[in-house]
Image (tube, rainbow, N blue to C red; front, side):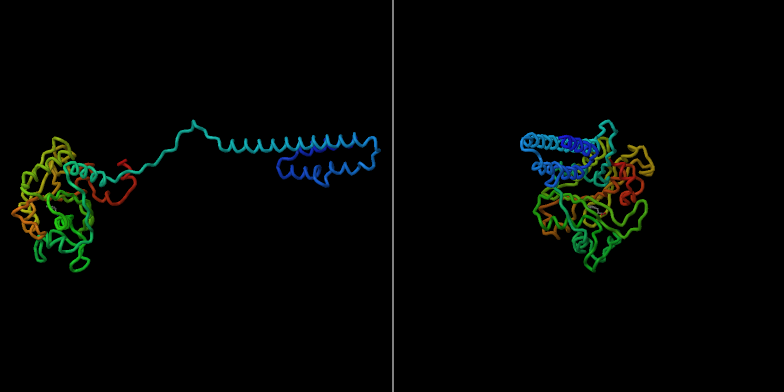
Length: 339
Ligand code: PHE
């Protein structure tokens, strides 16, 4: 009987030192396994006098139950300890200051374009797209710029093949639109254009234009002036003054170049407008009747105006950017300012 009592003490002391589930299993085998010490006690039954056997048997069962309970308790404790460890490691200190979130910025060229688009869409214009690799025919010829025309020198062209160029302006989209759609036509077309210019503060071999085209019956030069003056007021503010200077483009007649109050100095004169208080922002004109004819439209029936604005120029004026290269170098320190 005494040795039976001793076994349970041993079980308890073994368990006390066990710190892992594996160790607990080992101890369980040692005592409660088929060949374990407690199971072994039953084998002594035959050596015990008949009358003491029931007492002995129930004692062994009692010990077995105690041992089982002790193992259960130990297993629970280990489980709890593991859980606590897990919770501790997952603890979050909600009082810590938050990490700074790095948000991106919309590129200034896009910001300007979105504004331009919103204004023209508000006036009923639709946005269309055109290819950057273009037929000479669309980029020049149908725009009334034949092969030997001196106006070709105005635009230094990247040629891909004899009759295929990288577009030098967005005006070929005028042709594509008129060939495809009947008037009334009211479209703008944004896009990259290319010229063989060397890079400096004001030149880049790739830059951005937004083309506009309006064709209908009875469209006049005063429609052109009204739309563009209103556009510039909406872009740069109500007090913006516009000046239409006579200009020349082979595909418009008459043509004009448009200056607007310098948005940087408000007209007082600053380095950006070279002291003039006004700055050139776009080229425009009434679509040349020959261009209408080239596209199968009768100039006796239809008239219209077109314009092309330099998005880079508009952006630089708007934000006071003095070097066009900033727009293309993707320097994060520059771009971050437009968040
Ligand atoms: N395509 C001309 C240029 O790039 C701009 C322009 C467009 C002028 C439409 C008049 C009408 O210089």
